[in-house]
Amino acid sequence: MGNCTARWDSICTADTYQIELHPNVTKFDNLRAYHIEKIWRSFSSTAESCAITLADLKKYLTALRPWVLGSPGGLGDIQSPEAKRAYDHYVEELYKHWIALQNEEAKKSNPDPDYIDFMELFFALVFTSKMTLDEK
Image 1 (cartoon, one colour):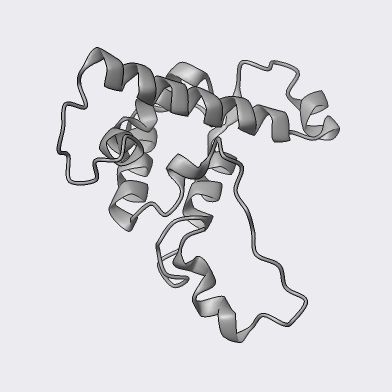
Image 2 (cartoon, rainbow, N blue to C red):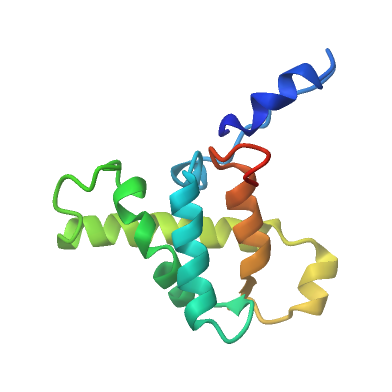
């Protein structure tokens, strides 16, 4: 998890447990503030609704491609077909994992499995980011 736990160290008690992220979401852990800002700008400038599809999510997270593919400085060929397939795979796994997390009540209110709530996912990315608590 990102450094969001650093400030909590003084608050945590002996019976506090560390959060472990599912392997399908670890590529999206520890995002920097500028990543979060880019995601938000991409979403807020084009979205008509908070209900998004997998294709929408891929579009909104495009700025993360270098980060997700392990090239934070933008080094390497992130535009290659192999890199695109790898990026698509990671976003698809994040999307599938997010759908699997929905409880029965959420499934009843959103019977269309082709859509997820962008804001819920966005706030999860913010929570696990490297942003300080004040920035969050």
